[in-house]
Image (tube, rainbow, N blue to C red; front, side, top):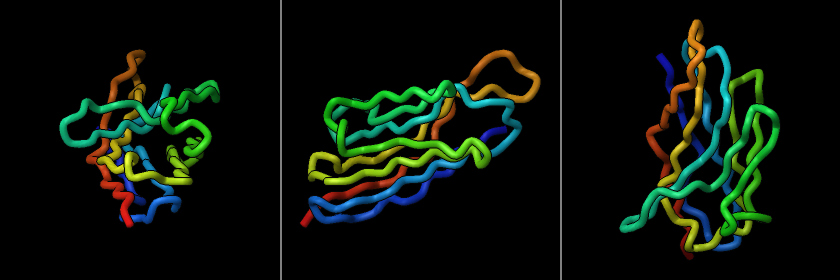
Length: 121
């Protein structure tokens, strides 16, 4: 019913930038929140950034001032601009969205397949 498709991961040197995209498609009525989580081997998945339907955002302390999340409402797409990347940012980044399907009052959480971000010289 709903697909989240991510793109934009890759290999970048420390101090570099990447932009991730996540596009939601399907029988969508509205998106309550959309954001990015990340996971490194041996660690739990953690929130990186999230964008709520009222325009508010929240960020992990470790990425504040370096990452910026934005949203294109018309395209059901979210972007994560990542600047001043550090080796500790290396992770698989997963898009997550709380979506209300057409005809439903309840929001369901969906996940993308993940995209690898590697920060290394």
